[in-house]
Image (cartoon, rainbow, N blue to C red):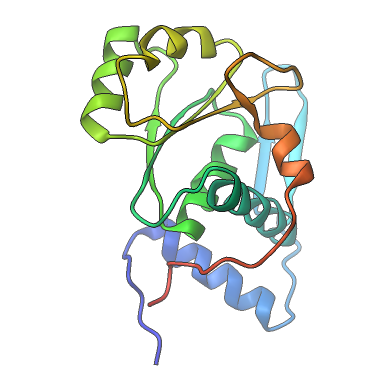
Length: 175
């Protein structure tokens, strides 16, 4: 008999959605519907969200060598990938540390040092700020950039998600 390990509304919702998909049912409602100020929108079905989050979970596990309990520091604006990282961290059992883009370098440094985060995920606008404090945070082993451009010292998350060899990883929602 499987029992839930976590009692958060997101994990219970995610388990519910996975059960629906495993039983062959499909929802006509999107799992994620994101609209920016310019009117651009992204709609992901539960199947698409599952596919993308498994890809990202594999990047975190295989490429970044993150294990259950490792910390992931996420500092992105509210873009669809922000939610994707949330679900991927649930899948891998890593601890997500969501942060706002309004933090100062001092705030970021404090959070990184206190948490012992091994991985940082951000975009190209915030990467220079993180670079100014990275040398003071020895726990960081991986820096991932959400961008279509390369930046020295950063892994390109967009490329890694496109190149990662898919393989099922052990999920930590159930024990």
